[in-house]
Length: 221
Length: 221
Image (tube, rainbow over the protein chains, first blue to last red):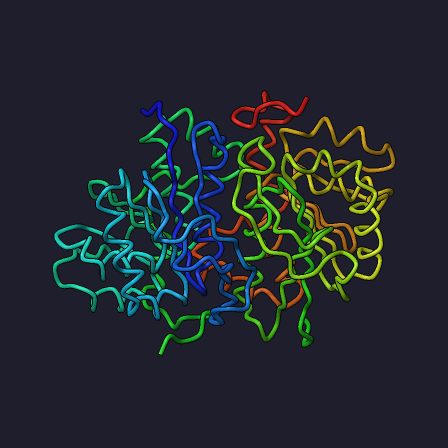
């Protein structure tokens, strides 16, 4: 349970997946501005384009509330995934910001390939984590010190919450809201958003698609 | 089935609900920029704030791609809901834009209370439609010529697709993608986003919450 107002720092980069970001933020937004402040963060103050499939700069553009340099204290660090994750793995400004802000955050939550950025920042060494099922093979390359969980809607390990692909971020966020505000609140958020919450983090209907063909998503090579 | 590139016109206003918008747009974005163009529209070119619960201007702000005056031809008109819907019911610029662009659109899709804006524009007279369950009583006040369906995840009537609250927009959009591109494509989008698609539009787990207490959402009075 928590009484304080939570600062959510939402990390943007070109080609982040829009539902990775706005699914979790929707759930948090329902708690109201008295309990949550959402801060959209990026390396520069230019509006950040979301992904359109594998295209990194063609989707709707989201305004930046603060740059990494001026992000301020963050209680919940949210790192979405998407095709745009891949170039960010080689961006020191991104990795260093995630490292520094994760250290002081109460919770660090990633969606989809967002966990690759946490891994690159060294935050998941010695921990259990998960990621997008279609990109699972990539995660194993990040670090041998991470226990990547193949079958999981999301994984909790200490303050680190990592979810499977895209929609799984909503289920993970409801679990985080349950931890912060209690189960009645998380159930009311699910009802308010008419969302059928997958409450069981170990039940993963998409594990069958592990590294599977990429489907509509094209190739990352 | 369709071969042409679809122009999606996404209607923004202060206090639109972020998942009403970015759930459907996520599903469409997976089709890729070769098949879909997303155009974020608003009355003016100022970035538009999303809702934080009942607060209309505290959420993340989204950039405007074109104003109503320069919206261009639209194939799919997407109208989200949220607390911000209520003031827009009295905004002639909004209602007139929806009227005019709906006339030429191939499909008109609304999420949550977005259907109240379609109703106010007179587009749903003589049709079946649905809306957010917690605001259902409001819809009946709009027009006696509309058959409001209480128990539905979404309703299709000709080119008009109206969904229940927030998350239901994703299920509706997958149905629209099925109609446009076939069932294999819609299933691949659902898998790609790790989304458990509610395929049955008549199955509505949230009808039990009809006009129910408003919960976390506060009051619209």
